Length: 109
Image 1: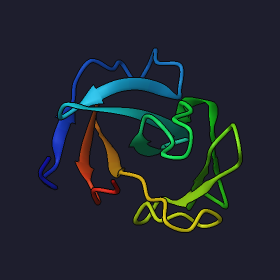
Image 2: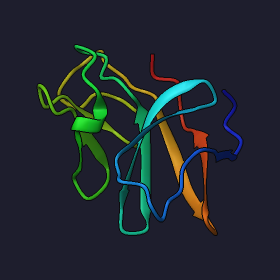
Image 3: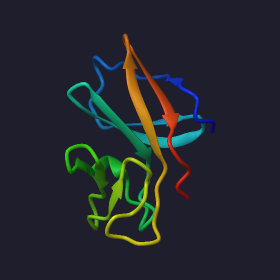
């Protein structure tokens, strides 16, 4: 996947119940929303493959915490905070009108 901005298809942001599980560029991802801010990460935690849609955005929107074992990752680059050696794929997401655009920040795995 390139890091160019691309439309995230298949989501109606007015009706969606976040977090939303979907595919983007052939990758399974989860998109989170809080107010007008969006975040996206790979769908499964690399530790025990728990679905990140059961997780939470924490630390003022700078990290995601897995809902199973509280493994926490930086949204800036996907590195594990309390789980050395683990890294996840993270995506920038922005709203443009009624559409969401996304691009890869890194490839974590």
